[in-house]
Length: 140
Image (cartoon, rainbow, N blue to C red; front, top):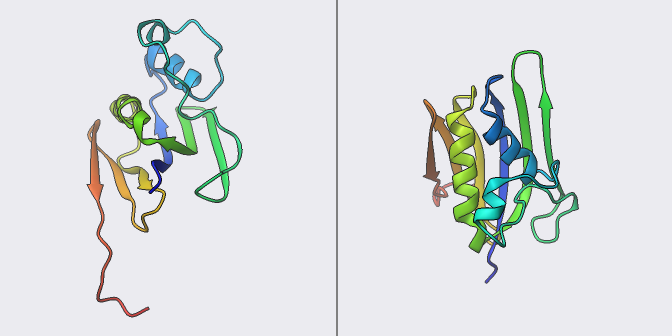
């Protein structure tokens, strides 16, 4: 059994997102080389959204982009994340949800070998993870 998760994020962030959160996100995307307090406090922490190119397990491409629009930041990421890094990923996504202007679905997390993901939902700045279940009665 694999311990790799497929992670997809797509959300818009407030134009006034705190610098600390934005710097943390940029570091996780591989856009900053240092200067993060969290790295000093948590040795061994690695960027979660920095991989690029062909995915090893989940197929397709790994990507992570942060773009400044006129009135917000837009983030799209697709990554393979090992199970031991899920607590750090959840912490990052909680901070993003708190600063998101996107309500509703902002991403999904799926164990590599599973068919059905858990959906990540922003409900008024709070991250909610909803486990989906396959419809066993479907005939298509």
